[in-house]
Length: 290
Image (cartoon, rainbow, N blue to C red; front, side):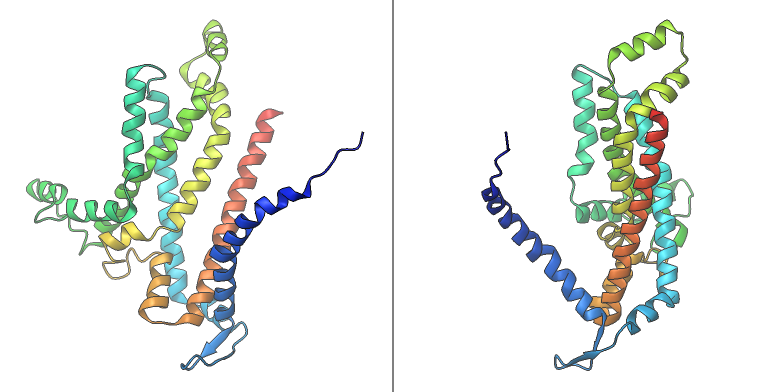
C-alpha cells in the first residue's frame, strides 16, 4: 500500500522559516554585503572585494584577541568540565536533598549576564566589595582594574561560578539514566570506585558531555557581557576578547567593512572548532561502543 503524503504540513513550517529568514539570514547577508564593500559616507558604497578579509587575516590586533580568546576558552573547559562531573557524582540521587541541590545548582543559570557582571564588579572592588576588601585585609595585593592577572582570575572565577552548574546538571541527568543493575553488577564484581566511573558512568555520560563541551565552548568563545561589565576589556587590552574587540571596531570606531569581515571570520572559527569537537567526541563514543 502506497503511503499518502500530505504536503499541506509544509504550510505550518513556513512561519518558522520566515522568522528564521528575518532574524538570521537577512542580517547575515547584510554583514556579508558590508564585508566586501567600502564607503566614504553619505551611504555611497563601492566594491572592495576581499580587502577587509586580507586586512583582518594579517591584523596583529585580531591575532592577539584570538590568542586571548582561545586561552580563556581552554581554561574554562579545563576547569568547568571536570568540576561539573565531580559535583554531579557527589550530588544526592534521590530524595529531598536531591531536589534542594538541583534548585541551588540552577540558580546561577537564572541570573542575566549583565547582572552577573555587575555582581562581580562590585564584589571584587577593594573599597566596597566583600572579596576585594577581604583580600586587602589579608594583605593580598588584589586589584582587577589595574593588574592583568587579577582581571583574568576575576573573569575566570566569575565564569566558573556562573556556568559550572550547567555542566553539573547535564552530567547529573546522564548519571540518572544509568540503570541500578549496572551498579549491582559492579558491586558483585567488587569493582573499585574508579572502575565504576571509568567503565560505567563516564561512557553513559559521553552524550551529555558532548553537549556540555559544545555549549560551554561556544558560550565562552562568544563571551561579551560579563567581562565587558567587569573590566571593560582592560586593564589595557588584557581581557579584550574577540567579541569585545569586534564591538569596539564596529560601534566605537564605526569601521563597518573590517568589522563585518571580522564577524564572518569569527563565526567561521566557532563553526569549525565546534565541528572538530563534535567529530572527535562522536568518534570516541563509537570506539567505546565497539
